Amino acid sequence: MRSMRLWKHKNGSYYITFKRGDHTSLKTKDKPIAEKIFKELEKEQLKGRLIRIEKGELKLLSDFISEYLTIREIKAKNTYRADRLTLEKFKEYYGDKPMAGINEKKLDEFKAYLKKSGLQNSSCNNHIRHLKIALKTAIKWGNLQKNPLADFKQFKIDKRKPVYMTKEEVKRLLHIAAEDSIMRVPVAIMIYTGMARAEIISPILFEKEHITYKRVKTGKTIRVPISKGLRPFINHLGLGIKKVFQWKNPRTFSRYFERLITKAELHGISPHKVRHTFATHLLQDGEDLKTIAELLGHSDIYVVAQFYAHITDEKKKNAVNRLNYA
Image 1 (cartoon, rainbow, N blue to C red):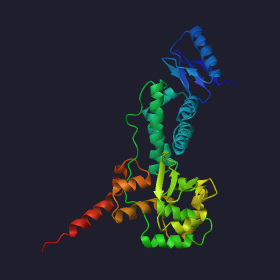
Image 2 (image 1 turned 60 degrees about the vertical axis):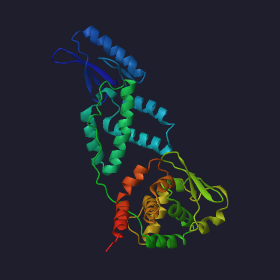
Image 3 (image 1 turned 180 degrees about the vertical axis):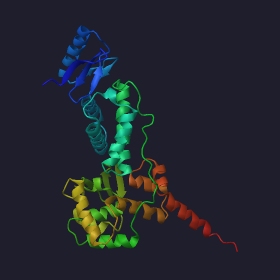
């Protein structure tokens, strides 16, 4: 069965219908010319691509995805994975159609498609960011003749205070984790280093005075001093590269973590909230933003300053309230 069909419209012009039902005018009423163009397009389709009728190349989305992901392989593992998931999601909505059909309307519809799929605004925005980068590359490569990105904006998100545990809650979690042979060490390391879930399931270098690990999100190497509180939890490990959680799937870690959180009666606490807790307590105890940013692996302290602004505001308020000249 043919995936393309040549037919004549009632207005006299010849059209091509593709396998998925899309059709394109050949802008000619001359049958021999239409048949010649059709044969050329059939040849190109066998190669996995179509020739753009008006100008340039008409590349199928699947071809672009394959080429784009090849050049993105040099990025951090999580970045590459996010690129792939976003483009798979976009292809799921758009279909394996020519790139030239991507316009402002299609991008608006994709945003609505993301929301209808039940994703939170933050997750939708992550897909939007990665798709924008990909489409900018498509424009640079000449796969898109027009720029459809002008009004392709992210969803608005209410800026909320980061959720974190109190020091008493941290003690409770450590106490519960101490009774769990699988989670005792991973949880303690997260609490005392601010390490994220992706890092805690990866190989970690244990030195005499420091723990060194690589941020999965950025590829940056982070070196954190071993605190007095952490040492009793890791002394038995010795020195060298170790894995403190044996499974590779992040979801497996989350399942074990949720079991502890339920047991400790700490609601709304995720592995990432432990990272917020680490930063928040350092800030509350008077540590400067630059040091906290370095410990978290952020290259820009502005990110930390913005996210924990409510704590610094509280510290400033307490500072000026201590002034009393009466």
